[in-house]
Length: 323
Ligand SMILES: [Zn+2]
View (cartoon, rainbow, N blue to C red):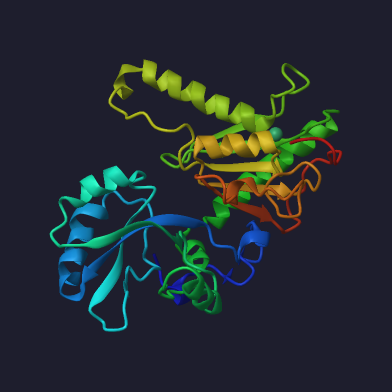
């Protein structure tokens, strides 16, 4: 990852806008709400903190899905500085107390007061003042800057490729509208391994009412994968999620069915041209504000961006149509 100052792209971290054209879509209503996770804590003697840290490195980190980089794992548990309360792992890693006790048989230190009731924020807070607030409310945190700034800074935005793809779906969508099609939604699925692009359009009036362009795109990727598996030269490739880390471009903000299907397919990001205020499911202001790609209640996420320049118009679609 390049340093923020050295990033050649102009990124407005405050607003989440790249090159003044790509606007990061986030669940703005819940940005300041932590997503909490229960953790297993134990009390140890102060002289055993070194053994604890070694144990975490050797036995916990490789299995722990929560990073804890923003959390002080060790805190004092009494005024005399003789005892420490430490976080061993999250409930995502070990759910049941019996399993936790079994796991701790390997611990190279003595401990007592096992508890599974403490909660900590899974992700770092966006501001320093929230970091202090959450530290008081939940558990002491370390302020390392806004984690979203790091996400934006580490992303690769090939603006030429992005614009070329948006131009293509825009032109295809306008051409379909000109030929009289009602739901002229067009999507493009980009395979991260080879930059292969699959273009798909909406077929709800051709076959099934569920044939939205994104659903058809996912199916096309599945069919291609199936073909590859039949080709014996690709037998060695490991099976994985459909569309893993794909970029999906689409002319109109996806509906709940399509945005959920993109969650299941494990795409990396969705870039679209036109918001659909009634039927869209990504923006805080769209539909019922579910923000599917960024919703706290779902374990998987993807990034979403809307193109806010006016270079690439999409077909006009009635506001109550799901895209
Ligand atoms: Zn849809």
